[in-house]
Image: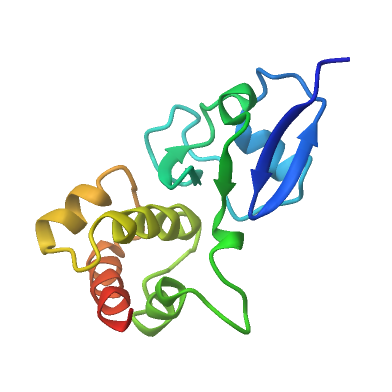
Length: 154
């Protein structure tokens, strides 16, 4: 049995005695039941699996579990709740910034990282901050509006 890997997921300390080479996405979804992050490309290129690791947006599909040892991992489930949604969650709803919803979790996480670095981002900062997130439904203009809305509401 592998040595336990300690990390914090959505504010909860976890100790996982799992293969350290498993992808963080696989562990989040299949061991911890956190299903908002999705498998998209498997190569860290589409953004559907983005999570925050110590405040930085990182694709979890190509991040091995060992790389999260001792770190804080936050998924979109950890951003807010139904009763107290994160400003980004409220803004995405208000701007209807999700169509099929497959990319939405990764978009929310990337946008949260962006707003941590730039409280009032300009258009260029938003586009740069969201460049690693793809949406095949074409919601990018609504996503940009939602990020602007969330920044203004903070």
